[in-house]
Image (cartoon, rainbow, N blue to C red; front, side, top):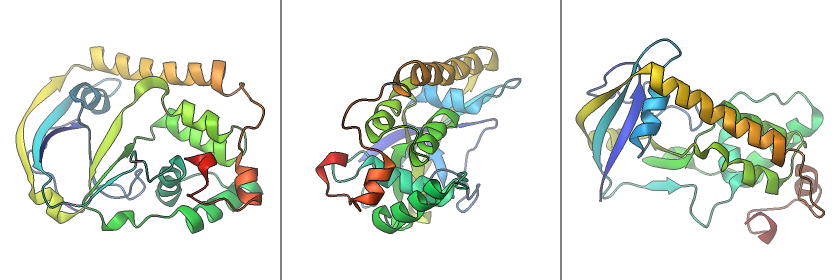
Length: 225
């Protein structure tokens, strides 16, 4: 199975380097791509500089893929990987307890996979996740919030094997005057919808992190499927 993927950057990358990158990205060190070229253009630009949507073909045959959108995984699996890599403020007792519990019960051996597919925790998504572990929003509200702004999915290359399957096809230049405006609007739209609708829309029976902890819920509980 061959796929076309794109990497947004402020420079052209003909040969991505395995093992290079920031360890505190969503899924740790890896090469972060998307199947959406427009999303890559948004990711590549800055407030005052152009970007590039680098295009690649990857042959996925024989590679192990962790698709966090598959039915066997829950949003808490994604959140746990995020907690293991990103810098959350867990200074409150509830947040610290939540982090410890989720890592204990929802940890996945994600580092053993060649490729990971999952949400991208940009600033808005990251703030939604932080609100959840701090008890400000319910699991239902978090699930709804993850769809706001339509920020798409990441396609992350984790292993040397996956890097060896990449073939550079070319690139498209993204003008920051067009694409940074679109990126900022997308994030602003997600935040506005979240604060206007989701953050204040409590429903009877909503599931909060406190209940997950108190009842020691696990991944097979139908309430989080």
